[in-house]
Length: 282
Length: 278
Image (cartoon, rainbow over all chains, first blue to last red; front, side, top):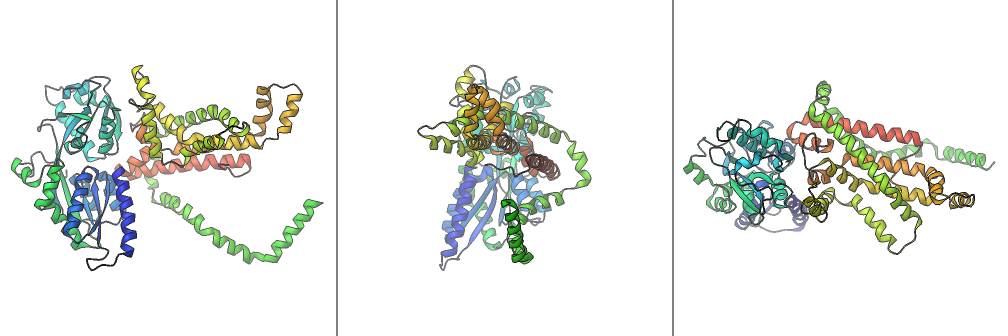
């Protein structure tokens, strides 16, 4: 939420500054990028690198839940690029006509992890402990990609004998809130309000000091693919494409890896991108 | 005599300026009125009325509606019960730092609700100032219905306190003195003289508080979280519905609008005057 506000403030400043800057280097060139909340830190750094390589182009971000951004885009919000945390929200925008089919690319991958506050008040050490009565569990709402993946994980675990068929139902009984944003889950667990939460590994990396992690094995996990695409009616299509190319190029990929994402090459080698665990639009 | 004169005078003025001037006045007044009404109208026009009845009966809508009504009424009751003495102090007691206290009470009305939510979490959260000792006793407030009520009360109670203080300040002190001279004790004076005389301000203040509590969103989602049937009030269901199912969101929005409009209009009719924050 703070990031969004900073972004907004930046956007206002940029508009104000652009109005009075006159320079030879693409005067007033700016991009408005709608990006999933989980991308905010990595994309802030990419913006700096991209601007340095492109004559100080200014980038205005709108970070939020992918479903929220998709809804805004389909209601006509002006934007140049959309980076979603899953393919289904990208498909929503495709169907809304704001993105042309075939112009989207998967640029990063991510997976789920269970987080608990560092002092672990509910003494959760395994995934089974999430089903223990009285645990205050925080999930993202199922409208948010990570919320849906969390439910998928519970469903997958429930068909395994080691967890048992009641696992999902028992865990869901412990949910005290379905947050509208993955960062809200992370913050509330880090604050100790929740006993446990399910977030992306990239989010967990941000609060490493205040939380502990419990890994979810790959066979129960969902590897989320992040697609990026130019908005069809972008006022600045070339610059929009340049940004996307930058994200897919080694410089952009290196920044994403730094923030805990799985890059395209690693995903290909691990077999994620060829289907398998990857959550495709279903 | 005087009143008939002034009536006559105003008729004269009206005739002199004619209907033309009225038209210009309306033209000047219309843009803001239109701006305020247009989005609400768009909401009504966008709603698929065919599915309205079915959507209105869906579990998420019914749960959110019931929860919103009970929590907002509870928040209002708390605001009135604890707001009355505070308003009386503000209206009648002269003390140093009165302006500071008065301004502090204004703050929740002007703060972004998200600030209110974070502040409530810092105070009543499990690691909070008051919340931590309570948690040691086995009482947790965050993510409960109590948290919803507290969030609503925090942002909405000032509306009652301000209105009630203004009402108390406007009561003719002579009447209170007269009652006291006739042997009424202080509580009796308050109950039988002050409150009835300030009734209109108290009532409209309570209604404003209720309306604000009903619409509370930001503090609730941060402090109380979002669980259908427990903490998901109408505004939260509308917000998540916007991302999940626009029709449900629109249905809820229209119900909320209808309730708010109905209650406010009814109260204004009862009071025969504009309900203001005073």
